[in-house]
Each structure stands twice: as structure tokens, then as C-alpha cells.
Image (cartoon, rainbow, N blue to C red; front, side, top):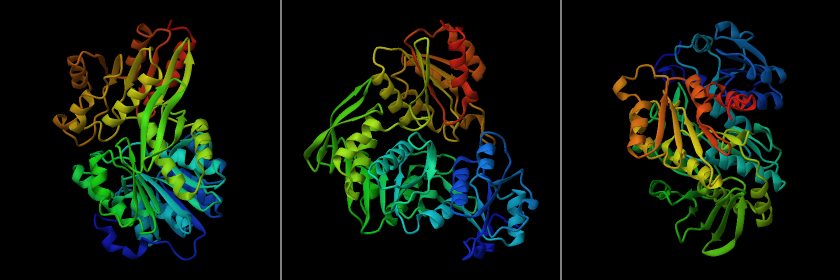
Length: 487
């Protein structure tokens, strides 16, 4: 059986055999694991999978690919015996299928190990890392590389609108990976991005996050320092040097570092930023000389910085400026990143993944500028392991200043976290009100939907912030609007 020191007991099992035909994925219904399953199937492997929660739409997606799914975890799922098992991040040491896997002596690897072995070897790996902006930046990079005719592969933590997918094998030389700093698997507590073989790495920001994994900012810095050390001498790092922590961490890099940001004197810098309803317009300075004025359809200063990082990478791989300018104008974005879910009765409903206090602040600033003159109603669900802890209680109080009305759902409590260490939505609302903001706390999503009809008016923008499904609040609100329950 696996135990707390299972890696020490079974080190020879954590590898990929020379000959592999049948690959089984544990936790296959996770977004990343399902994407990997699809890529492995496309690459010609026989693929099976198991998960505790096998239901549409993910079950339909996988079944449509011809992948045999098993509901629940069991030793029987390892029959017939696979050549390799990919163990998802959701799997714990006590999982009965994981214990059966160890008893059977079947080779196993993590999701990042499998991605690195089967799809990154022989490619130029472009890794996008950082506390914020990874999904949008990597999606933009993959889209513009494709527009340039370079046929990249990619694995990204969101649905790229241009591809209607979060993954693509690609026939070209480049592979774009969203480099997550979250831990790899129960038998490998290091960050995922250490398996992604970066040739070029983007580092957008470094802040404390993932309080369930990292004790403090110092621990986060150690993880990113390891990433920096992986980039070879003939590679490159594109780093947002507006951030002092990023500047510190990239200092020892053995490869060239190209700084970007709003700070004067960087290799790539922004100037004359203007956020309009049509997009974000900005001037780009390259090595102190004006490269041109560009327009991105993505609103906000933070998205202009994301675009600047992408431009720096594309310059290194030889994509011309005209293609970049066209790509920024036509980039369709990413699902759940400032995604307009619908406009009914003059009320616009927007879905966004923002949950860290910095991300909340930047997202709301972007939306307030893009929809200038309209009321911005923000609905926030603290759902991540970090946001449900007290660690960001005070930081959230300064994140909502751009909203006209703030509605906060009480979080589902984390197991094994005491009340005095848990985040309080009621306390956040008190803090917001002390700043003169119109804020309200709700015990449930239903209570929020009951309240919204009484306050919404034509012209309002409703920004719904959560890293989860939020009880399908977006569609339910749009249905209310369509049925004239909101006037």
C-alpha cells in the first residue's frame, strides 16, 4: 500500500515504462486530466479513466472520445492491468484505487509528469507562470502563435475561445503550458511547473496564495526560484519587473531576463494606457524606443501587461509586429475571464474567475473603466482554499472600491479549520461598509438571487466573481432577466 512515505517505499514505480499501450487516469473528470486523456487518445494510446463524480458534461465529453469511464474508485478499475497509471491531484493516499495500484506494482506518474513526457519532449516549451494572469496570458500566446502559422500545442487551465478547447497537441515546434504552482500529487508535493521543461518562461507576478499548500510568501518564493533555475542558458525569462518579488527571484537566472511592465527603462514597457469600451489602447516601448500603439480587446491595465509579456515572447520567436497587432485586436479571450455571459433588458452579466484580492481589485478596476458611467454590481463567492481562510480577510477589504454595490456569499467552511482561522463574509461586509461602500452578506446563492431583482436597473453591469460554478448563478440570473422578473 501507499503510505505517508510511499515514494521512499516504491521509488522504482514512479516512472514511465519504455513500452506503453494502455494508460489509466485516476481523477479523469478534472479539467486538466480530461484534457490529458483526450490528448493521449489522439496520440494513439488506449485510455481508460476513473473518478468519484462521473456525470455530464465531462462524462459525455470523455465518452465521445471513446474513453472507457469507471464511476468510483476500486481495485477492479485496474483490470485489465494498464501499462501506466496517471494519478490526478485529487487522489489522496487513502484512496482505495491508489492503494490497489501500489499493491499491484503498476508504474504510476503524476499529471505534470505525463504531460512533460508525452507532449513536451522535443518541443520548445513556453511556460506561463505567476500568481495572476496565467490563463489569459497563455491563451493569448497560443492564439497568436497559431495566427502566425506556428501551429502550437497547448495545455491551459481555461477554455481558449479561439479553439473552443483547453488543449491541443499541435504540429509545430512550440508548446504553451500554463505553469501552475500548486502541488503535483500526493506523492510529489512540489509545484506542477517544475515538470514542464521551460525554454522560455513568463513570470507575471509572485504573491502569497494557496494557503493550503504554502506556509507563507517565503515558501512561494522558493518554488518560483526553482522554476527560474530550470530555464537553460540558451532560454529566456520574460518577467514583470514592476513587482519587487519577481525582480528578486529572477536575479540569479542563468539565462537572459527581459523585464516588462510600466517601470521606465525596462526592455518592454507600457505607456499612455487608455481603457475604453472598445478595448485597451496602449503604447509599447521596446528598449526605450516606441514600437507602436496597440489595441487589445481585453479590458484593463493587467490585460495590457499580459499582452506585453506575450509580445516579448513572440518577438523572441520571430513573429512580426503586424501579426501581433492583428492578434490583439481579434483575440476572443478565455471562458470565465471577464466573459460576458449575456445582456438582457440592458443589464450585462459578466463571469470572472478572480478570487485573490489582487485579482479582484484589478478585475473590478478594468470593468469600471470599460463600462464607465454604468453601475457595477459585484457578486463574490469566497471558494478557494485560501479565500476561505482568514489569511486574506483584511486584504479583501481594499479590493472592492470600484464596485457600486457588493454582494458577498458566506463560504462553505473548510474541514479541519477552526472558526477563528476561517474567513468571514460578514466581517468583510462590515469592513467594506466602514469604507463607505454599499455591501451586503448572504447565506446562500438563492438569497442573492432573491435580492438582486429589487436593486437591478437597465444599464447595470453585474460582475460575478468565483473560481467555481457558483450554483449556476449566471444562467439563473439571465433567466430571471429574460422572464421580466427584473425591470
